[in-house]
Length: 160
Image 1 (cartoon, helix red, strand yellow):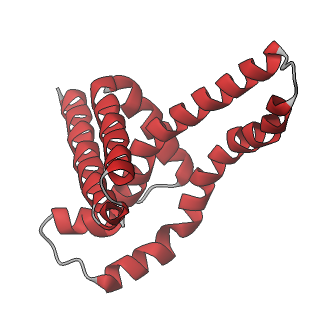
Image 2 (image 1 turned 90 degrees about the vertical axis):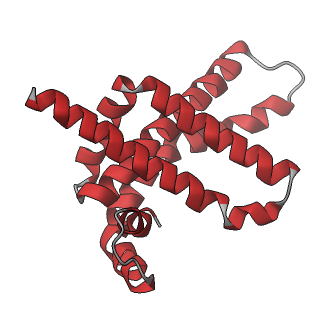
């Protein structure tokens, strides 16, 4: 979807054929990026049965908090890693490294995109689940344009 949106936002022709080719081209690298979230998700899933006991040790709460922080950091990194992957056709490690640099140097943009995602999730929950057909594409357009903007800023700083 991000590759197709990137082409559409560049005013070029972006049909269903492009989406199918992009899926075949990017799926392996996208899966490698997505697998990074498995460790904190698995750790949280294995820890939740311990919460049903009468007295929960403090270390369990620290572990769950660490899992949630790790997932939040990964979500912020994913806001840049997947667009970098779709826009610049790099390997997954370079996309992750670029995402770390871009998200740390442009904190307000990262928080804004994260807040937009939370707002869209509330809209889906409180207004209508039908918004799931529209809002991911809208959020993706914002994510793609934000990534292009911050990369252009970074390359302009390098040229000076």
